[in-house]
Image 1 (cartoon, rainbow, N blue to C red):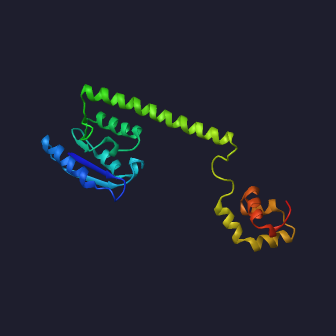
Image 2 (cartoon, rainbow, N blue to C red):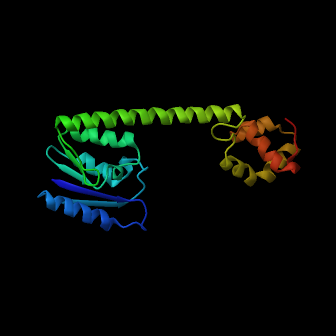
Length: 203
């Protein structure tokens, strides 16, 4: 089974260019494409959420997967290597027409795969390092990390019960008691009260 995979990021791009190139490539090598798979999706999207995920899972021994460029498989070198590793281990050939690569069970392919794999590992570590450095910088600058305390959903929940809450506070109910009743944090209630100065009430 020979599968041609075509991907574009937006509808403004033309998938016919990739198709034409693969047709010429296959014709020059006497290859018949049995199945065409096309999709409009970002290469940053995990392959499991794309048609590509199903395509790769169906590949079997002696099958061929053709793309115009390896970057059509993913924008992540790490993910490209995962796909290549799966294909090589299952004796599936990957043909990249523009790059001129053919990944099969040969020694040259294994050496090239190793080189790509090393590059992917380095890329993965660099991304992790940049993420850690960015988080450390934000922390050093005193910026809040992660989700803000008290979600907007909970604030909206309190807004809808504003009259009810004012009545409870007027009767002497404490804010902590209200927080327990509504299963919210004191910080969330504090933000709610800041937005509504007329709420009043003690702790």
